[in-house]
Image (cartoon, rainbow, N blue to C red; front, side):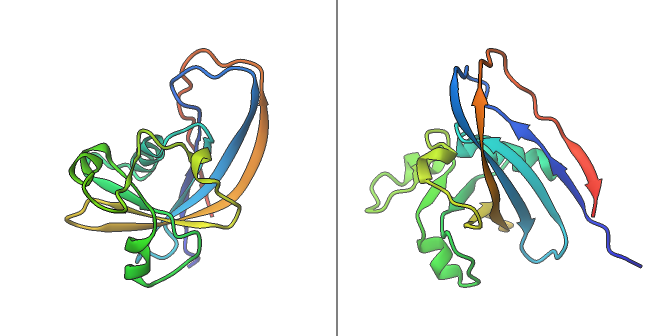
Amino acid sequence: MAEETVGFISLIVPKHKTSQGNMKIYRLKVSIIGIPGLYRVIELSGNCTFDDLHEAIFDAFDRFDDHLYSFYITRKPTKNLKKIIEAPEITSDMMVDDSSYLKNAPKSASGTKLDDINLNEKEILYYLFDFGDEWWHRIRVESIKKLSLIHISEPTRPLYISYAV
């Protein structure tokens, strides 16, 4: 029997107003490390924050109990946990408040946008959800498209499209 995987695609534009100009749309493939074949595809605008990305992943995997989280910007795939945790970190705001004394303090997820870190196609990020149970995710930048905007004034709700692979 062929293995089936369910994925979700959502285009998310943040709740704040967006005016005329060009916007990047990031298509991200998010997989849970250790569970082969399970992934979600999410599209977000470049002015989404990492907090918005966390919420999109949280919703796409049907989670219901929020926990602390961090993103690690390795840009390349690795199985070396030390390399992952030594990479630049973007974390939930509660963790930023607790780590301001550190030399390489993590950035705030609510204050850092996707566009701020200059992602390129095929680059890799890692996402740790729940510091107790340690749900590790691998995020691959599948594509980056430029979109011309005229005007968006109302919040855009995510549109989820399910498909079988």
